[in-house]
Amino acid sequence: MSFVIHGIAVASGIAIGRAHLFAQTSLDVTHYAVAENKLDAEVERFNAAIATVRNELQDLEGQIPAGSPPEFAAFLQLHLMILNDVTLASVPAQLIHQQGCNAEWALKQQMDLLIEQFEEIEDSYLRERKQDVMQVVERVLKALMGQPVASASSLKPSEDSILVAHDLSPADMMVFKNQSFHAFITDMGGATSHTAILARSLGIPSVVALHHAWAMIREDEPIIVDGMAGVVIVNPDKLVLSEYRLRQEQWNLERQKLKRLRTTPANTLDGTPIELWANIELPDDVEAVKKSGATGIGLFRSEFLFMNRSDTPGEEEQFNAYRRVATALRGQPITIRTLDIGADKPVDSTPTAHSLNPALGLRAIRYCLTEPRLFNTQLRAILRASHFGHVQLLIPMLSSGTEINQVLTLIEQAKAELRSEGIPFNESIPVGGMIEIPASALALPVFIGKLDFLSIGTNDLIQYTLAIDRSDDAVAHLYNPAHPAVLYLVAHTIRTAQKAGIPVAVCGEMAGDVAFTRLLLGFGLREFSMHPAHLPAIKQVILKTSIPDLQTLVKKILNTYDPEKLTALIERLNQ
Ligand code: PEP
Ligand code: MG
Image 1 (spheres, rainbow, N blue to C red):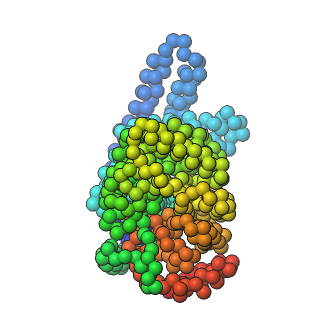
Image 2: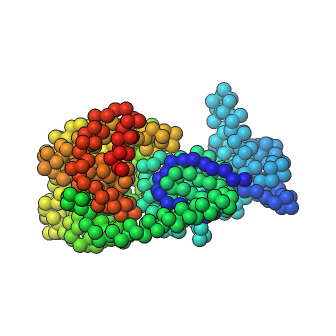
């Protein structure tokens, strides 16, 4: 059966391929059809898994060491009771036959039903027993799969695999970076969640906020991902398929044409030179930076060096990574942002405190200031790398003058240490701050007086201005870069920095979105930093733009508050 799912477009392009389902947790299971003549075997597989878990639990019971707390035996008995209940032990076998589905799916449906019943129980102790149900089901699922649950690194994509996930963490995405998927689609996420940003950096189509795609799509099903429209077509018919093949060819041709702009200077029609810089996550991304024709790196998200590992990279390791990039850029600027962890970018080695509002919690510079040793290690590594190229230091999430003073003191301390150790570094390394909290955009003199440059992080600036969690698919439709409040803050920051004579860049996703290139040029922006994959398209817009011609419309846009009129004016600007 063919059907269409709508989500949020994240990365452009069209992919035609087959679904490869990724289970992030052990309770995410795949759903596929089982042929009529294989249903008995599927039931046998299910019964065998139940028997395996029953034996496991009974063995555990027999091995309880003398003197163990009585709760231990009670806990195992409870798990055995749950396992032996007909709801889990026999109804799934009936479902396999009734629905012609796989054992994992049948079991999952029963688990959901049981959980629902537990949730209705008034007694809080009994209600909490749903955790035990989940643990038992997890055991059976493991037995069914005969191996640990798929992890990002164990997935093996084939030629035309399209990754379908309920949710993906930025750490998972880093692993996928080295695999050859044709597209990514997820149920969760917003357009500027870090997972989406990474998908975009791969230059392959991606759609997020599809809500139920993972449950509806089956392994190996043919699908089309339209990264421009934010649409996924499952089981397309021949006509749709040939239409999309044509569109895909056109898209690829367009991309090839854009590549020819690599060495063309990014000057507007009136001759204004624009800096187009790249955002990177790891030193290996330098290759893509070179291919894109970027003239520097405006954002090195250093936190990605800390992901997918249980330890923290030490000074030598960080220094080598930063120096590698600095050397490769041969004198072009490289802006290294200090550790920006927390919220949707957790790392295993540095546990952050659990918070009800992680985006407002101990993240980024706030976290680093509570971990001075960790911060000092990074500062020393960046300072040492500054001897090998044009390195700039960028501090994320600054919100007050006190924080800046603390940071500047710690930088001075790290410098003093290196000096006394006779280790060379650039004494006048530029130190900049991210403007990504509305308070900083509204109190710019605090920042301008103390910092050498500013970089506007529109992803977080929009999140905090509009109070929209950037990674929450439930509110993703409200995440609006063209909101008058956002436009005001961006324009105001650019204008104020320029008046003060300090460089200002935009390094959030807005800088790589062709819909906003002219508007940002009209605001006075001359430094754009984006994922290398976006750079040619942005350059093409710049080459066709005359800045003086934008002024009247830009002024009007800044004085317009009606959303429809605003959209129409921005569209006119882009014509
Ligand atoms: C931003 O917030 O716009 C930004 C560039 O930083 P990050 O996306 O890494 O939070
Ligand atoms: Mg940010």
